[in-house]
Image (cartoon, rainbow, N blue to C red; front, top):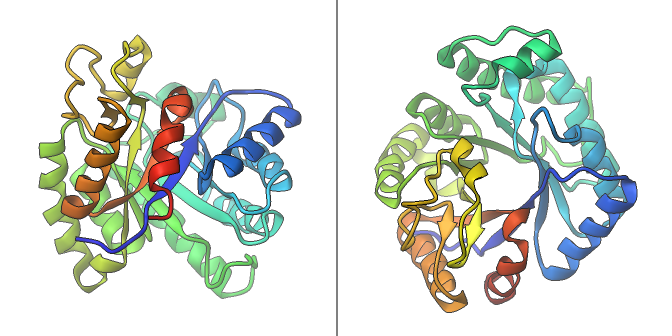
Length: 279
């Protein structure tokens, strides 16, 4: 379905001083990861300064937000910070956007911004993308990557995925089963039209291997009791060979070539990345 090579991203929100981010950036780069991504959520360090530390400590590694909740940030500030991070990284930034989790009302209150309905938040994602591209096109802000850094939109709902297919460069699809993932592809194909083959499709992985799954995964819609036998795209089970075969099959059948991996699974991911990165 795609002739894209595999890319791997490391997703981490573990807080620490600049030296922590520097060490993590160098390790991710040495291990063959393509990107280092930082979440946008209360309880972790702010993504923009953390990514600036990563940019200063790496030379090849791309950096990105995973993902900025558009309702929590003004479109103009998103454009400003995107241009800044792209300049600091010398053209290695990727802007990840989302509509915010449904339970993020407390974070919105903390930041003093309204938290609208699901439909309103999807609209805000579109407005952020439009603002970024407009402010770059008219020269208000000037990123290194022209006309703009790649934009990822992550989500699971039909409205957000349609927007992603129409406007984004990378689409991160979140589902609870591979069957549901297959059902999302026609939605993306229809919405993207002629540009479908230009999209890079992504999935986020929280765990690799057959060990026990932590209970905190429930907040991301993952039931540790049922996420087995590679039925949930977010949990890769089996030995390294099985995981490698599963990812190859999903790329061949579903077009998923960009795999982002939670730092919780870093050690288990190392042999997988070694086998597949860039192939």
